[in-house]
Length: 563
Image 1 (cartoon, rainbow, N blue to C red):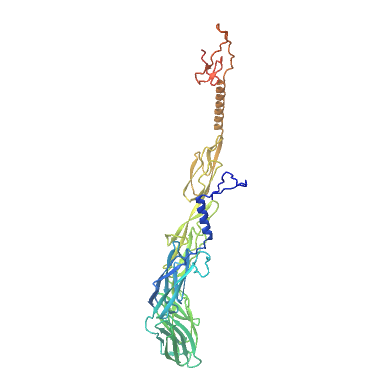
Image 2 (tube, rainbow, N blue to C red):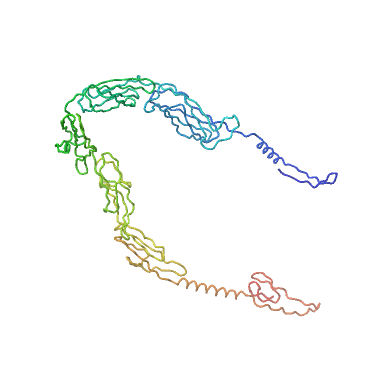
């Protein structure tokens, strides 16, 4: 707004009247400002959420994807959530960025829900988008919140395969007291159920199980009571459909035989066998040894825990001892192990760990070794890399899969320190160098002005008069630069300065104007008797006028021409 004052008019009573005029631009700005202030607040439209496609049908055990599209809203990012599905539903990405007013994500729904599956049926679900960038925005009463939106979709799950069917069986129909009974329970669909084991004596035992899709589970028990045993299994498929199965077996008394074998040991190697601490011969890889014991007796059988193979190879049995009380076949399982040796070269430079015996196929690694290890004064060891069975290997620490014996060697190079001492000249070359290498060192000379430091020679482990030098690093070395002081530049400067001052004084004296000469009076003229004065003279060199009678130019000292 522009306010202009006219010349001060007066009204009829003689009082002053102020005139105020408004320019057009100022008036428009004022009008717009009032409209903005008085207008009701505007609120962003709510975020729009859509699901594509809105409905899908898939078989049990598979997954499906929906596209979630967002547009509008007051935020630049929205968090997505889904409700109505009891299985897994995940969004990618989440949150969804909408800097340009729109965005999208993929909703993936899996119909495998451990331990079972989605039951066949229709599953409506809701996807909700919520502001993920800032706090709540104000909205008028009854208005939709611009920071949230939702949409609904439908998932139809179709049953796969026949109805639930279960079975229960044993590995044999007749057992001797002390035998191990292996029970197998199978189902053609994911199911949960209860196994009831009824022995000839005592109360039934009940066990609850969950069976994954198309798989079976096993349970073992010891045939401890003579007579007929009954097994029954009742299950449902998590969706209200059930199935059951039943079987039986018989247990009879007798002595029991124990069969022993080794697995994982080559046929050329064997393990010693002990029964109750007494030697009982040996058993080779691939062989079977049978032992007979009286019924209702207990015996401890053990084999060697380690069986040696070739260099760096051995066979290890984690469970090398067992106690038997009934007929059964037992296999002592051996695992091939390879030796991993870790060391340094030179030996003992630094501690290194990670070595030992490891199962075949195991990924192992050494400890990380330092890049530099201090030795004696002026000596250190620089890490150059790992050697794996003599071949260079990258990385630190070194990693390897144990498919054979390995020796990992951390290779270090001995380095010696070169110390370059100098009070001047930016000494270069101080540092550590590999044993046997040639180190270069230097200084710059001369240094300083006008008083200069001049390099004279090297002292210490190297002698020479050149500012540059080299030395073979077969041990720690120290070299020192010797300097002398030169005043010659200062003397030259003093001489030059004196010459300049003298020249200035000389030219100043030569350019000084001579003393003024008073003008000589002239005789009176015969005609009028008046006194005639000489004309002022001009300098031919600079053109300046000089007083009458002056013989030299006032400005430059030039001799004036006398007319």
